[in-house]
Structures are given as C-alpha cells and as structure tokens.
Length: 102
Image (cartoon, rainbow, N blue to C red; front, side, top):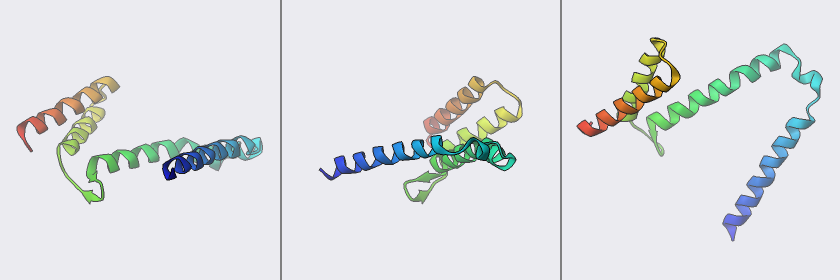
C-alpha cells in the first residue's frame, strides 16, 4: 500500500508544479533573465542527465563502453554530422567496445 501512496503523492506533486507554472504572471516570463534561464536550463539538465547515465552505475563512478560511445558522438558533433548519424555512431562504437570486451 505504501507504493500507491507514493504514486499518489508524486502525481499530486506533478499536478501542483504544472499548476504553479500556469499561475506565473506573464510579466515575469517576459523578463530577459527569465528568458535566458528558460533557454539554458533544458540544455544543462540534459547534459547532467547524460553525464550521470554515462559515468555512474548506481552510486559508483564507472568508465566503460558508454563513455567511448559518448566520446564518439562528441567527435561526430564536432564534425557537424546530422543528429541521426551522431546517434548511430554512438551506438556502433558502444556496441563495438562491448563486443571487444572492454
């Protein structure tokens, strides 16, 4: 039963956060600082999520095939490859490193 309580509390919390976002006055959203933060925040959160998923296994830092795939994707991005090619390069390099056994 505790799991259902946690699910209910989480659902209510998500609804409350969405409602608070709708209640923010338009004048606040038009400020240059808020616009700049709104543009940069998703990039920062995605970068943090990528780093956590790549370099951590639970609470232990790791350096494995995922890091090689991320490095290959970074090189592909620097070479201005299309997004799907960047993803494909990361997948192939990660799979190759795992197949080799590193």
